[in-house]
Amino acid sequence: MLFLVAVVLGNHWQVVQPTFTSLHGVSSAWFWCLVLLQAQVVVVFCTMPDLLLRQVSMLMASSRVMTLVVTLLVVITGGLYLLKLNVLTDVLILASALLLARLDLIRIGVSPAAGICLVLMSVVVIAGIAAGTLLPHPTASLFAEGLRIT
Image (tube, rainbow, N blue to C red; front, side, top):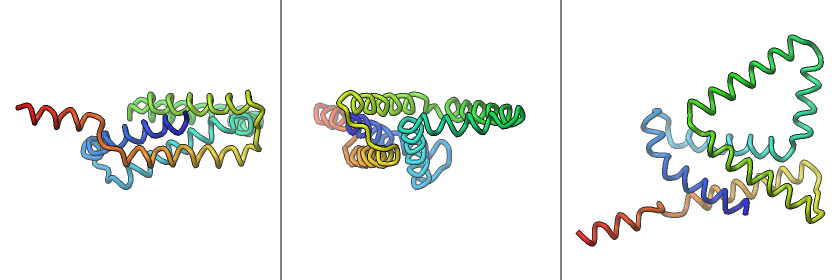
């Protein structure tokens, strides 16, 4: 299921890529680098939340200044990123699929080490995104049929 969600997101990003690149003046190579970086960050955060949050908690526990700096950094940069680029839905869909995949693995009794799970989930998500970019635009057949009718 995670692979199918990644395929749909890859196809969606393939469809919106020309609009995004022309609107923001970004090359398509940079667009795909940012998309894959975003997907990888979501995979890391959702695959290893206990390890990641433990490290952040230890950093924040070192002093009150670090607590304030980390909190402001996460809230401001995360909020601006999610609101400015309108990517909140994509991030939430991918994160939900990843967390459900982890839950399914735990239910069936498969719990690989965090590093192995991270690599496997990354491969599944990136392969799905790559497969989704190879699919045609979902409404292209509707436009072709409309042109044949008229």
